[in-house]
Length: 189
Image (tube, rainbow, N blue to C red):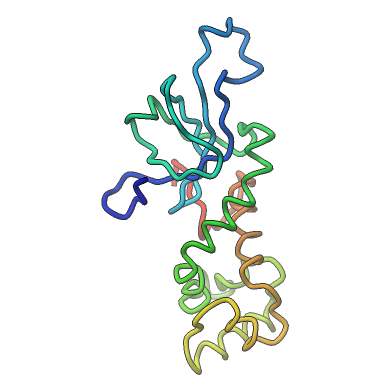
């Protein structure tokens, strides 16, 4: 499957597949379109995809979010619009995305900068206050972090830096009124 690196077409991970459409759709079965819910890999936007009747996809598949063989239509949605199954699957899809592109997320710890004169991007991560932020900044001055294990070993008090990022990404996806977003974008941004 395409990985999204060759063009501007977003690639998304399928969170839920509804071959018979939404359960709250009152139309007769034969009029319902197969649907999938997906989260984009690059900017964690949520999509509802209307699929072709013969689409061959499964939960966890990476598919392009564009009209093509499997996808007939796609539109961006909010977290509240996801099915229960898609909401449950979201955390696993984000963890897999972070694992698949570790360098990108480790580089966040290496490259994060102040947002304002009083707020640093690292402070937006859950559990990172002034002291822990300063520990990260001191450790990365010595040499860049190589992976999440390196971050955990060199930054005293920061346990499981990958899970901290996953938690922030989930917060950015679920919350509609956040002032600052680092990872998850919305159509309006």
